[in-house]
Image 1 (tube, rainbow, N blue to C red):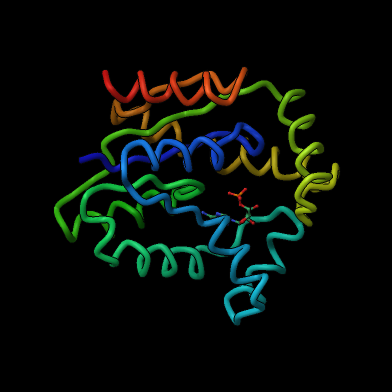
Image 2: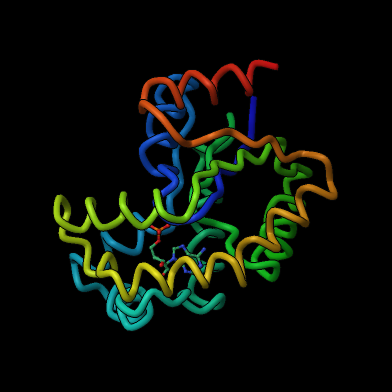
Length: 188
Ligand code: AMP
């Protein structure tokens, strides 16, 4: 059983790879970005609150995000492992996740760091903007999200690196190839 996190800059391919890895390993994917987008689409109270931040490429406040993840991780389908995508994204969220998992005497087993260089990221995100019409995929917001990653999320990788659970996977190349790379890493 594996409790995993996939992390990396916006555009590295986390969502795509998370879905594939979860299918192969039969564990649920938990994507905070997807949960926010679903709520925004339905214009729930949570969605309306989140949209003020996601549209600008800013992080949704921890108070909102943490309780959403706490509720999700209380569901029984995560008992045999899970893959988190997009959470934790700040050092404060790491501490919160530690507390959530501690209650069940568990912890993250592995952190997959998916990498790609900045030019490639911007290119992919602009492509996705056209395909999916995400409101946070305009060039200005994309650049801001990359800055937010460097400032707030890169330190998360450092925390897990000190715990010795980070494995880095090159996110460049064919989608299938990257999936195989990740699975090979996990099998080790
Ligand atoms: P993503 O699909 O992971 O790129 O997330 C899209 C947007 O959702 C982000 O730019 C944030 O506004 C918000 N979001 C997703 N995950 C988190 C999180 N862990 N903490 C705060 N905001 C988040």
